[in-house]
Image (cartoon, rainbow, N blue to C red; front, side):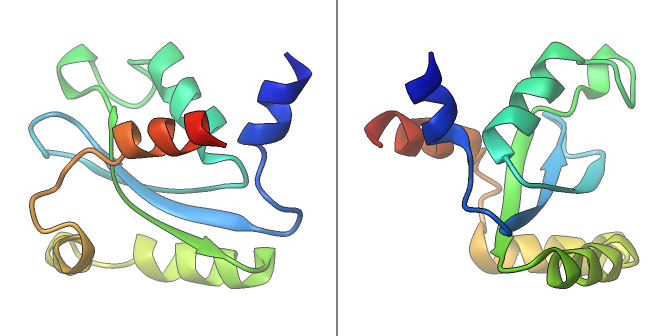
Length: 112
């Protein structure tokens, strides 16, 4: 169990800014965390945290790993103020098909 915890933790000082959406892409939620795997597990455990069950936030479509908390907070504040079209343009620049990145993230952590 301790080995699993060690693998899922990110490096000290690293922060992750992410965008998560529902299956119909109706909602775009911008967040920030230090452990993306734990955060995604939280969203799975609390499916109606922000919306009803039809708009469950469960698809990770964008994330950035940032070197410090100050940089991450600034980036989070900037992206949070983006319009929906600006967020979509940013997402499409790295994930044009809006593929759920959760699967790749789980696979990557399984390899480590």
